[in-house]
Image (tube, rainbow, N blue to C red):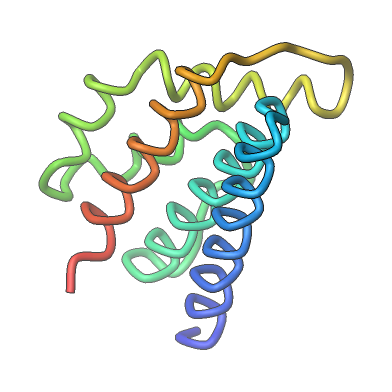
Length: 123
């Protein structure tokens, strides 16, 4: 199980780096998608660590709601509800149609990703 968790965390980091590349190139829709993927993998890795499994869903809010007992998660959900909704939209729209995101939205999503990683994976 530990190897699988490590794989998820490493993959999340790769998606974060892809998001930075997309952001620098002005591809904000792709940056949002890659931030969403990074966040989703960090959450699923933590669920594997805590519970040994996770629900087969792509809803960041639903996955995070399974970890409300972790200090900071409840506040994170409250503080970033719009960002989380935008990230979920980025995931869905990347597959079915195009949605435009703005630089400021991506910057907020990067902030959320950084904060979430600190909450879930405190050393």
